[in-house]
Amino acid sequence: AAALLDRYDIGVELWSATSYKALREDALAADRHNRLHPSKPSRVPLVTQILADSPGPIVAVTDFMKIVPEQVARWLPGRDFTPLGTDGMARSDTREALRRFFEVDEGHVVVAVLSTLVARGEIDPDLVNKAISEYGIDPDAVDPYIV
Image (cartoon, rainbow, N blue to C red; front, side, top):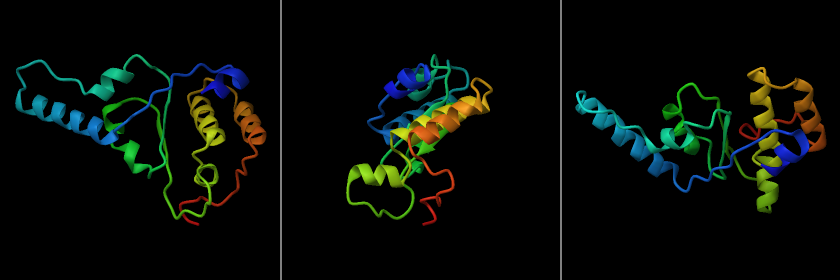
């Protein structure tokens, strides 16, 4: 997060999800309540409430498979949601190497945020190219999921 602000002058909010499963269960309970009590005030899932006032893109990073943070994406309608995770077969001797291989390290997080901002028309694509170069990322590397 600090790299985005310091290097690229992009403000960020950093949140930690201790349990995507718990957030999903809360959201499912809210959905069920709303479905079975149509006359009562709707319940808003916690994940929706927490991120409601944070208008920027969401990059959800995990050392697990991407499907873990994707569990909550449907309760963030209209939001740019990019999950980064360790889908595929591990070939790393350290956690740092694992994160680099699976593209969940700092550089790939920065590039994911910047890429989303480019897609939204908020920054110039050259900033993404700069980050790719500064972090030594090979844009033509094989996707770790298929290696």
